[in-house]
Image 1 (tube, rainbow over the protein chains, first blue to last red):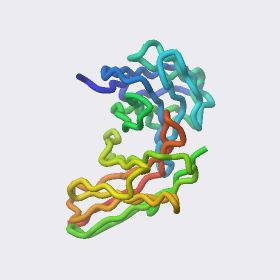
Image 2: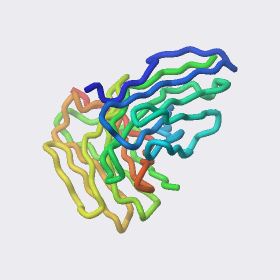
Image 3: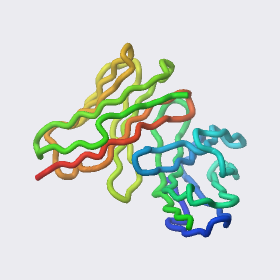
Image 4: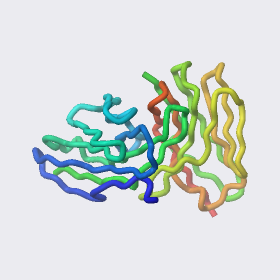
Length: 113
Length: 111
């Protein structure tokens, strides 16, 4: 039981390049989330998927797209990376809407130069 | 949307003393308030949570209090130890599916 697995752990991109961050959970959770973490700003929600087949925007969705591939997997895509997207990205999952806490992945540290 | 404010942003305490972190939220519909601890370079981990139908919850050296009327909740750590040094985040749920987080408090426990 691995919990929430994110890949890659580190990535350096040039401005304008694209990439996809992968996230998978093996806990049969319904809801999945992508957050970014920047110094002094806490965790800000990019996109979330309340259940398989649905996705919704969070606080900071511009420049990102997501895909809920199946119940286990939720990917985040940067189509044209910008230096402002340099951040640590966390994927998280939650069992259902009865207010159980999130389980976070180990994070992806992304640098855009 | 929900706005969660967290204070202080940094907190330095002597080992053995208590630490208190306070958060306020704006959306009166929020009914779930978790606290996460993040050690350097690690993922956030849930340490305690409280629901709106209770005013206080305790788990060993940590406790959380909630005042729904005033829309604020607090984390209390007693008898602090060096391993309590970390960043702590509060959060509130503006709906059933997502959490809004505070900006975090960096706690340093001095030996």
